[in-house]
Structure formats: C-alpha cells, structure tokens
Amino acid sequence: MDDQTKDLINNEIDNNEVCLFMKGTPDAPQCGFSMAVTNILKILEVNFKGVNVLADQNLRDGIKVFSDWPTIPQLYVKKEFIGGCDIVKEMYENGELAKLFEENGIDFKKKN
Image (cartoon, rainbow, N blue to C red; front, top):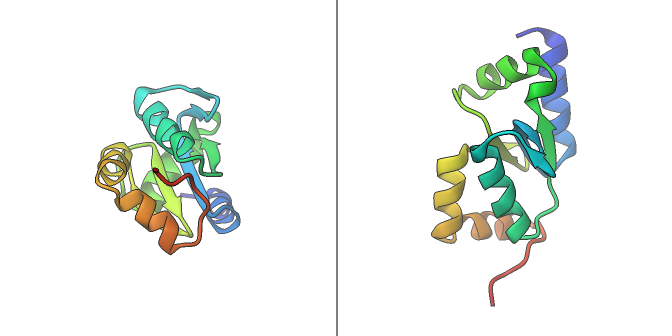
C-alpha cells in the first residue's frame, strides 16, 4: 500500500467518528453487504461517513491491508476497526452495536 492511500484511509478514520468503507455510497450501495451495514446505521440514525472503495482500486486493496481484514464493507468507530457485515449485523441484533455507540458518545436512536 502506498503512502497516499494510507494517508487517505487514516484521514477518513481520524476525521469521522463513524466511518464505513463500502462498495458504493450510503444512498446507492453497490453490494448487498454494504447495503446491509448502511441500513443498520440508518435504522439507528447514526451520522456516518461512507467511503466508496470502488472509486479507487488502491483504496479498495489498501483498506484490506490496513485492517488486515479480507472483505468490504469495514466499519470503524472512533478510529477502532469494528468488523464487516456479519459482525456488525450480529452486534446490532444482540444490542452490542448500540452499547458501543453509547460508550463512545455517538448519537443514535435508542429503541423504545
């Protein structure tokens, strides 16, 4: 991974409390896994930055090296790598994702 790609990844993670490296954009996901994670974040009304890895092959390859995680999407919260679609989905279903947001002071819609 080149320095420019690494700097881009670090910049997105550093400047966005919730950052999702995904295929497509939050309004137009380009794969089902990216759509699933985006939908979970939208249900929780979390303000997040979606980074489209399809726009840059270096970024698409680089994020996998950066996180040492083979798949996309990848969710970061407060600079910490959380996981991909399966992990985020499981955390959402068992309440861990809401707890993570709460512990990190991130606004989200709590279930009634």
